[in-house]
Length: 466
Image (tube, rainbow, N blue to C red):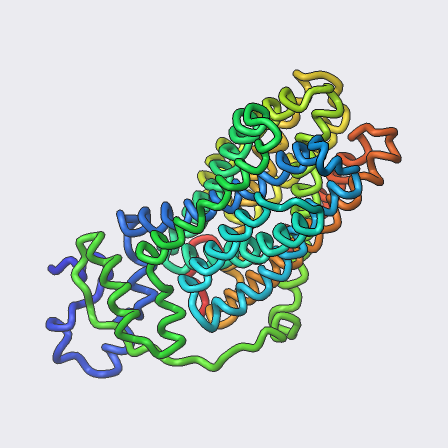
């Protein structure tokens, strides 16, 4: 028995030479079925790490801006007030909303790999431009362009990893991809704690220059990442698709078999998201994305500033935020373990429910111990939910719509990410400068996200639709 027979349970090409045509059509796997049936191997891990490093750079940039804004506000040259700080935060999310919508659309037409590397170049250059900004207008313009690159990259990377992952491991691998967000955020918190306070007035500029490193990594990513087999087949590029599949098979020591000829399916237009077939799914996933983004970005982009106001020290605030950020990692790892055992829907809804409880408790935290305990619980549960959300979104749409649909859901979430930081000064003024009202609102948003998640289809262990 050949390795192909052991792996797929079907004869190799030579063994099936005399089989009837109809039987061959039934038993011969497609390229995507060949990928789905592979065990996890070094090629999957290489893809995960290569995409994950880009993901970590994104997180580092989003995390850095929360520290940078607090430092810029204290810079005598800028002396930003609360409204100006909220705009520096929110303008990037406006860019991310536009980038997410366009990035997914471009990925369905130009390829996941191409868009992934292009977005890293865009936000790498823009970070350098923001580091050398001398006016508020320059800061806002550079931050907007950074957002374009960040918004486009995230849904494209999750789609690419999801499409290569074996069906039985897809949820876990996608959550592990999202766990690189914690790595990037922790690096950002470390830069905020060690670099910004210790390098004078240029501290925040040095931090942003570190954030320009994705420009160099784009060169590496271009060589390390394969293009999606599903995308290549949709474009009629069968030879390239076959080479990609054989690369992953070779990593598992599996002999290649002949695939059924890929059938070029008709295109699905983006407006189908609101057609009878997908409307319910689209409403549920958009609502989940919206409320998760609202709570996460409202809370965590303002976290350093809020803690600095509460405890009277920017340096202490950065240290507390670093400790809270470290809790993201166990949250991701627990979600990665549960997502294939409990399923996507149950894991996501439980993590969101815990996030709601943690946000409410954080709103009542009055001392350092409570801030760290409830902040770490919020960090772990919220980011674990994020990981499952990125696993769910690409699975519930077919290949011909996957990139655009994932990008559209992310764009809906970014609208909330724009709104939440802008509302923070209002929440703070209502509470006399205290964080209590803001985090009660975030707790309610988590409850709404939890309810929406219960209406999502369960795709654990299922093959992706073409």
